[in-house]
Every structure is written in C-alpha cells, then in structure tokens.
Amino acid sequence: MQYQGVLTKMQTEIGNPIQYYLVFESDFIHVNQLLNKRVTIKFVEYQCLACGENKKIYRQGYCYDDFYNQPQVGDWVMRPELSTAHLDIEDRDLDFEKKVQLQPHIVYLANSSNIKVGVTRKSQVPTRWIDQGAHEAIEIVEVPNRYLAGITEVALKEHVADKTNWRKMLKNEIEDEDLAEYRDRLEEFIPDEVKEYFIASNKETELNFPVLAYPNKLKSLNLEKTPEYSGVLKGIKGQYLIFEDDTVFNVRNSEGYVVQLSII
Image 1 (spheres, one colour):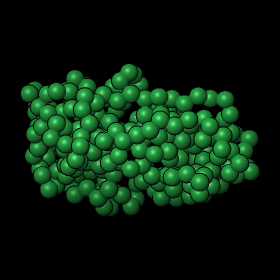
Image 2 (tube, rainbow, N blue to C red):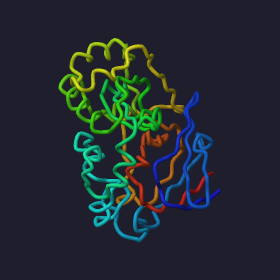
Image 3 (spheres, helix red, strand yellow):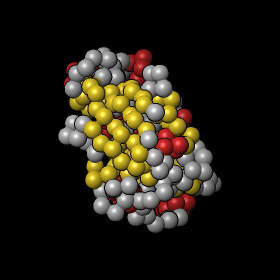
C-alpha cells in the first residue's frame, strides 16, 4: 500500500486504546492498523498550510511569511494570557480571534511525564490531553474565554510545571498521581476573578495509548536530515510514531511536509 499527502497532526478518537488517523487530501489512514507493519516515510516536498506553496516550513506547518501573519499562530495561542478579543482589540484578525478566544476554555492538570498545567478550548477535551501523551488528566476550571484561562495558568505555573518531558513520556517513565487531590491543593492560587469557575467534584480521565513496545534509547527522526526512513511501527503516543529500532517521529512537528508512505 502506498499513500501520499501533506502531514497535519493525527486526528484522534477516544477509545481503549486511543484510535489514530492520518488524513490526506485523498486518503484516510487508520494508523492503529499499521502496528507491527513496516512503514517507509519518504519526504517529497513542502506545502505551507496557509499559502499551499512549496516553501520551506518555518514553524507549525507554515512558511516564514505566513507564520508571522496568520491569526492561527498569533502570540496569544501559546500565551493565552495575551488574548485581547474580550476587549475588542485585534491582534491579527479580530473576527477569527473572537471565534476562538470567546468560547469556553479549560485549565487542566495532565500527567504524561510529570504533572503539568495547561489550557485548551473545552471543545478540545480530551484531544489536547491525547496530543500531549497524558495517561491521566483532570479539569481545574472552566471559564468563558481564553484570557481568564491564561491568567489562571500563569498563576498556577508558580506551583506546578507547564512543560512535558517528551523523552520520559515516550519511554513510559510515568507514575500515577491523585490529580483530584492535586487540583484541590491548587485552588487557593487561582486568581480571584476566576475562583467562581473552580470545578470541585469531577474525576480524572484515564487514557490508554496503542503501544506494543516502548523505546529504550530515543532517536528522533528529522525528515530534513533523513529524507527517507523505514521501520516497524510499534506504537503511537501523543503525536509520535514509535518504531522498533527506538526511532520516534513527531508527526505534528512535521506539519506541512508532503510525504510518501509505503506499508508492507
């Protein structure tokens, strides 16, 4: 079997285990069905997710010019506390920013390699947790806009990490934690204007990933340095493909790359 298309982050579906899909323009690949099969990935060219041109990808699937003008990658995306749509203030495209920022957001705790705090749109639960490779997660607050979620995250980062150790996550070097208890300990640090949105009675969500064998020593595949790679797929976790020889491939970090996939 052979497929070709531009990489975007894998689509996911909650299940036991999580179901993963690669969506190309003319193909739809159920990645779970590729486990224990040899997969060859060949880099063909670039295709910017905005302009569609064969221009070197700068970040997040965009060429240099589009990364600095597309509203989808404004500073407020990575730093929600910079959101200004609730003030009717534009960053790059106010209509787009209102659509995204002025909807319910969740501040959460996720445990992938360690407990971390994060922000996502309510509509992206549990997708965001899956993408981070978290095996358990819990909501802390549900707020009406991205700005309130952002200032909550900033406040809680003083008391809990906001980054994932991707190496530990992929090696499955994890410990189960009582996230409800952890959430309750953080309540006092929530900003006053957000305290009314605290969620006190929910339970953590557990996630199970389709991994047959975890790697021992990680070798990260970079298609610019290694334009063709072949290996037996042994697992999928977060947005990573895990291969038998300990090679791992971050699909999301390769958005905007046109690839040819061959399956044996």
